[in-house]
Image (cartoon, rainbow, N blue to C red):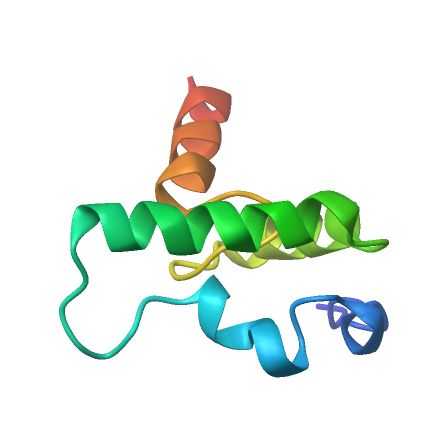
Length: 85
C-alpha cells in the first residue's frame, strides 16, 4: 500500500487561524451556530487552491469528521453511499 499524497496540506487555507471553523467544537453547538460555522468554512474552501486534492484525500481515507474540500461529513457520506449503489 502506498501512502497518500499530503503535499497539498501546507498550502491549504484551512490551516492556522481559521482551523477551528472546519471541525465542531468540543462543547454543544446549536444548529444555527453549526450552519454559520460550516458556511464560513465552505467559503474558505471555495477559494482554496487545493480544494480538490483535499476532497480527494478525505474521500479516499473516508474522513469521518470535519469539512474537507468544501463538504461536510454527511455530504461526503451521501456521495460515498450513492457511489456504492
